[in-house]
Amino acid sequence: MTTTRIALCGLGQMGLPVAGRLATAHDVLAYDISVERRAMAEAHERVTTTDRLDDLAACDTIVLCLPNPAVSRSVLGDLAGTISQGTLVVETSTVLPTDVREWATLLAPAGARVLDAAILSGVAQMESGTATLLVGGSTTDVESARGVLDALGGAGWSRFGDLGTGMAAKVVNNGVAHAVMVVLVEAFAMARAEGVDLADVAAVLERPDGGLVRPLTHRVMERVARGEYEGGMPLEAARKDSTLALAMAQRSGTPLFATQAAQSVYDLALAAGLGRADYAAVATLWEGWAGAPLTFEARTGS
Image 1 (tube, rainbow, N blue to C red):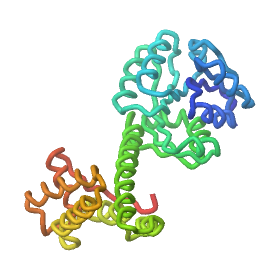
Image 2: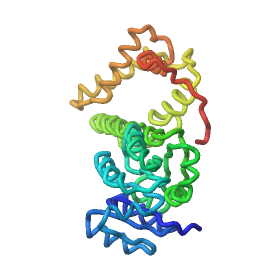
Image 3: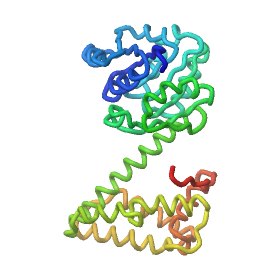
Image 4: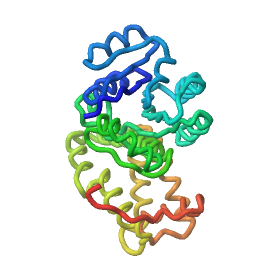
């Protein structure tokens, strides 16, 4: 077990449990502007704190866990003049892929390197050692950070590709989660207005053939992945069902926002002549708009 001292910048809601997990395998030097948060961090064995950001530059590995990209940019700007050649910065804050690439450019003159290790999980998972990391960076840098990644990613971590790809995967995941949250609330509001037991609705949605799971496991993982849209449920039928949902909600006075936006996509797909194709063919609209295929080699059990 390595005893290399790891620097940590940021002891907020996620940063504090990150300090605890790092301390299971490393000595940790942590910085935060809050005296209170520093005191809380020092309750962990092997964690010491500092009120001087520059002190972190003495460590070979610096982990960032900060509230937004602007703070990360400011911290690295301050450290750029004192950071040592070969230092590896591990960005765990949720930022854009272009941000971590900017960090790399910023630190390149000093000979420092950057790795993105987005935390997929929540605070409770980090505290319990069951968090998952989505990693982007060169294979050499990833290998150099293995001790940090193993300590933080108790449930596992995966390299998605070059610098920024881990953050891209995290942003995509969060975008889906936040959009699905709106769709689910709309669905439950519709069900409540019609007198349907909400527990029954939840049970239907979580089924393998339910409306929450099957669009991913069948329509995306099978049809979109292979670009196969013959047969299946016709898009015109899916559009009809979407229209019925809008009509039912209108009659009960239930506002729908995400569902209405999705209906617009089916209108466009129908106008594009996709009415008899499986409704997963909406993917071809984005292929045309973005100029890139959405087919891929699906991996089961991932």
